[in-house]
Amino acid sequence: VLIIKDYLNKFKNKCTVIAITETWFKDDVMDEVQMEGYELYFVNRKNKRGGGVALYITSDLKCKLVKEMTMMEDNIMEIVTVEISNEAAKKYFN
Image (cartoon, rainbow, N blue to C red; front, side, top):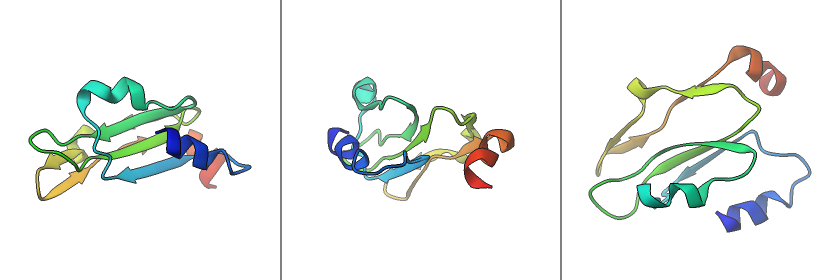
């Protein structure tokens, strides 16, 4: 995460959404990979090393995890889905 923070600090504008694949995160380290100013949504592999997906979404966007569209099927697919409030999104995506 430190490498990501250093990279993002090079830009004048803050990223709204950061999508990462192959996170290799494990459930017991999730507190360590939080980034100030962002909410973290993720899916980690359970049965083997590697994989995982994560979304860092700026904290000023109102959003929620869409559980029925978020899944992990080892060796097949990893999906994390969030719903961003229409009112909050207008600020960034209009």
